[in-house]
Length: 236
Image 1 (cartoon, rainbow, N blue to C red):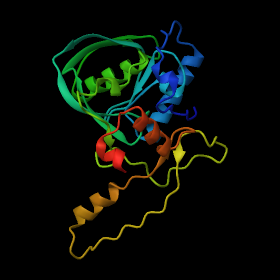
Image 2 (image 1 turned 60 degrees about the vertical axis):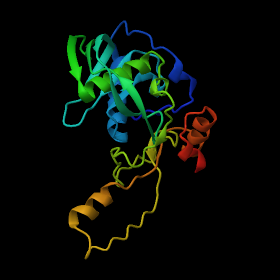
Image 3 (image 1 turned 30 degrees about the horizontal axis):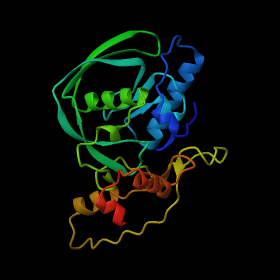
Image 4 (image 1 turned 90 degrees about the vertical axis):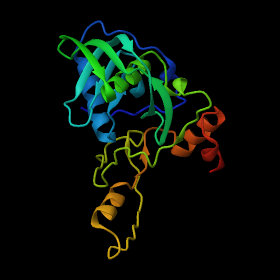
């Protein structure tokens, strides 16, 4: 298994539809396991194949406190109700937006062994299934932004932090996902601060991730030019 480069907006492959998997062969199995490793490394919960540059209908999921899932040719067969939720995406690192999604979905897929699955999903699983299957169809969550909504900086929404001691081997390509080394000094008056408070503050510190050739500033520039950033972000 190996890490795969995550494609970042506005990479054109994110707008292309993925093709059905006709045979679950060794290449599909390797792709699936590479996606799982990449997903775990960056601390994400869902990843679609075109996000790593492969136009196949493959999705990997790793929800909190659940076993990972590999979904081959997943589809949503029925959806129920609507709700407003905050969305984020590994192809838009550092941003989030308010969108309208279903309350519940029915879905089906094949696993890595070709076994057939059907599932009724709600809450986070429903949200992730819709998000990732949209990816397979070339649809991004920015397409679902509510009227007059723009993307906002996601530094404060509690995205999973990447631990500072995680490192790639020196042999890995510089364009693969990796930690961008940063120095952080946290000064806390521990005599006048509850332990729970400063420990929580320490866990909220964000480290920068580099996903591809595009830097975070490049992404911000592209989002700004496309008109997706909120006024607050445009002023920064």
